[in-house]
Image (cartoon, rainbow, N blue to C red; front, side, top):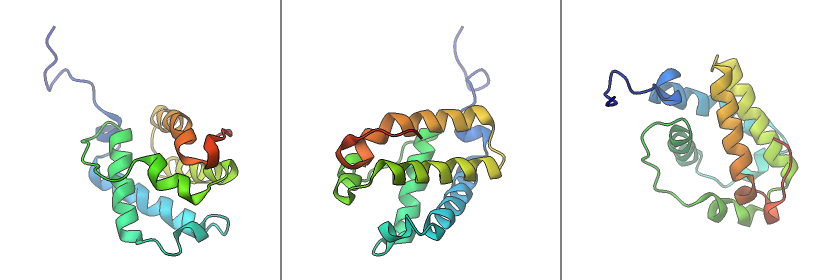
Length: 132
């Protein structure tokens, strides 16, 4: 059988509503992160509109949407910040909470959490693992 547009499986990106839904999720997510006193300091000198755009592009890829991300790699962007595993877990929790609040299906959230677990070593200081 040939896979056509009609028979191709729908990506998570399409299932949750595409670009506008990802952008809305990123906005809610960063509102939570910036309101968290343990995490807000990481963003003091960050260009937040640019940061939000990067996150939209990265989350789009994670969800199976078009890959238009051309920024730095995760390790290059995060290792200099010396992020402890506990802070990584907090960020993952805010993302999970955001997706849950926005009604994203559980299987999509589970797949996002699996990606968070896979990339954790690239983000946390020294590649130390923690539960996400």
